[in-house]
Every structure is written in C-alpha cells, then in structure tokens.
Length: 251
Image 1 (cartoon, rainbow, N blue to C red):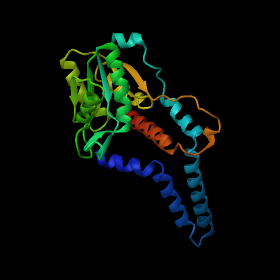
Image 2: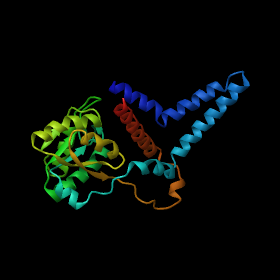
Image 3: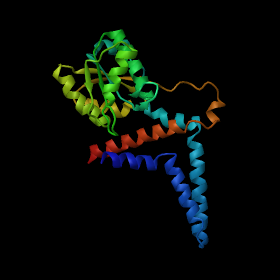
Image 4: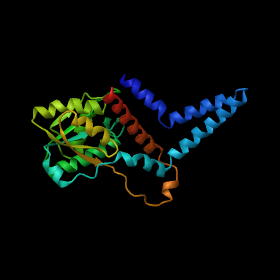
C-alpha cells in the first residue's frame, strides 16, 4: 500500500502528471472525429501551459502560503518543552564523497535547526525516519550527521517509520516511556500543518518549530521567471497529503 501510494503520487504530481496529460491529448488529437481532435489539442496545450505556470515562483509562493501558518518558534515555547523531535526529510543514497548513504538536503536543513534549538535549550533530541525504499534507516543517518557535523548525540533514534504518520506513532512510545509530554517539532514550515496534528493525536503538547519559511522575493522579476516547479510540486504533495488525512479522519 505504501509503495502504491508513492507511485500514484509520482504519476499525478508535476512534471509527470501534466506531461502524461499532454501526451494523452496529443494522442487524442490524432482522432478522425473533429470534436475529439479539438479536445485533444486543447488538453495538450492546457497541460503544457499548466506545467509552465506551476514553474513560476509567484505561483509556487501562492501554493506554499497556506501551508505555513506557524510563526518561528518563540523562546518561551522552547523553554516550556521537554524534548525536541526532528523529522527526517530524505536521504542522499550512496553518496560518493561520504562513502555511502547519508542524510539528504532537506533532512540536513531540519537537523541544522534542531541542533541550534538543542544547543540553546539543552533539551534532548529525538530523530525519526526509517528506510522505506531500502538502504540504511534515516534515523541512523540523522544520528551520524548530528554527531559528526554538530557534535550532538540524540537521546532517541527511531528507525522503522515510513511516513509522517508512522514518525508520530513510533516515536510516541520512546518519548512517553521517558515521561515526555511537551515537545518541539522540527520540520519544514510547509510540512508541519500535516505533522503537528499527528503528534497531537499521540497525546503530545506540540510546539511547531518551522524551518525554511518563505522569505520575501529579492526582486519582482524573479517571481516571473520559471524555476520553481519543484517547490510547486512539494506544495501540491503537502496539500494532497492533508486531504488524504482529512478523508481518513472522516471515514
């Protein structure tokens, strides 16, 4: 089920989804029936234009905006917490310069902020992430990065989870066994609206600690130059994930 979900998401989200839609439109445009031919051409044009529009920074910014409701973590909320939880964000598989698997870019961005908060507060760290596609578990790689790059040792390492829901459900017993009830949750700003409720459902008082929040554009010209397709894709993935969790809660 997990792999099926990943495959379906990859096929629907850009660039694959719009490209497949455009190819279908081109195939349909070869029909001998005028209506089907015109519909196919329209579909192909709309799909390709949609891909271009999604690549515009102004559009990606609009998609991300509703996913960032949490402000930067305050000093007061950090002081009130008992532990810091850092969610994994992907791995760098078989990294030549590291001699094997290591934490990916998104994971390192989260670890950097988590390490900063841990140094400022002295709170213990939990890192969480498994290996849904094989290789070494993400939690293990996060522990190594914290120790090697930030000279910090996490107190808990969860290595079996495959997604955000399992990050929460499998981290909960580790924290609860230590009497932890109030946590700081570190992840990308656009990921936290999906992650926070999952940890709250496990009974935690969660202080969101967003990192990589959107900053004001350096120039209005940059907003009109295509180059943000990946950001739009990530935002759509979060919107889709939130919708799926909403349906689960209603069922």
